[in-house]
Length: 370
Image 1: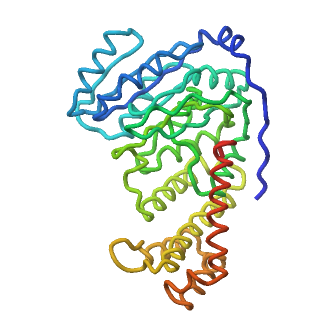
Image 2: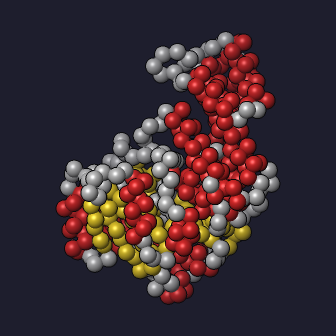
């Protein structure tokens, strides 16, 4: 698959950007469920943004904690903050979509109440999209912030921006089969957001990946290099921690891709090739998990991955899976025997190469955003 390279552009000088874009408006949607203890920090990180005019909507999804009192106090304190409470618990997707209907700024951000924006994040994103009208979404790094620890320091500087053609960005997502964005670091041009619509309720755990693909189908994508755009909080109830079973993760990512290819993805050049590429990536990941389980002799018991389900998934998402090297490696492992295969020199090298490749991909993602 041919994937182009991004256009690399220099940062817009801060003084010029702030002066030129002081009237740009950003609507920030803050869904909150049981996040009273961190809501103030989240909203304050938005109100402190310089160089843009912000409006914040806190949507309380019927939280049983003190979210109502905290949010009402924030709205009383600053006229830029509005507060509404769902009449009944609607879940994240319906709550987010309610916020998108409210958003009337030139740009829009969906920011979970447990995350925070980095200083200058909105100014940088707006500057990029103002300079590049074809860009519909800008994002950057979002370092993880573990509950109970201090927020990571605001390190680095804006080193430039990579502007990807939308189709090329989609191709990279299909090649990896993964989402490369946490969520709070994203700023979307609202006209583009209105054009693609709200989050798809069919994609419960991968609605954000599906949304980024839909945006890339109609607009270019920008990555702000060198400086954090947000901080993503990790805790027991965060989406990062919930439902991390291998089958659920793979199935939900597949739903995100399938819903895209059945909808707006049909307008993208080479859609059949892109869909096949995504299927191969997901199949390889499923088969690799089975292979590692065989190597470690973790094929039975409560901790064992669902081996047959993973194999069936690989065959379903990619009918050509038996031609993949991961399939051939799995068959050889089974002939050698569970547990013994992990000491086979070829598979020792394969495991080391896989870990190294993953490490290099993590480094590349932190540097280039893809």
